[in-house]
Image (tube, rainbow, N blue to C red):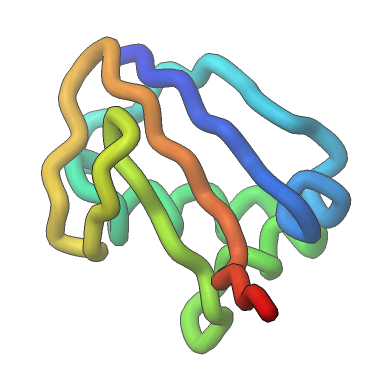
Amino acid sequence: MKIRILYFASLREAVGQAEEELGLPEGVASVGGLREYLVARGEAWQALGAGRSVRAAVNQRMAGPEAAIEAGDEVAFFPPVTGG
């Protein structure tokens, strides 16, 4: 299953890329599962780790860790944004 992942702001800087296409292994089918899979890549990916304040969107709709991911989806990760 291939998906497109977008990284914004400080997450983009931490992982060193703005986007990627990724073939997910069997068993990774939710936003939470995707985060765990990405964190396992190594040190730079800890920016997406548990306890980090990271928001996600699937196909431009805000999504929690339980949100399902399907082939062809676009998943975006970004830090919370404040305005003022």
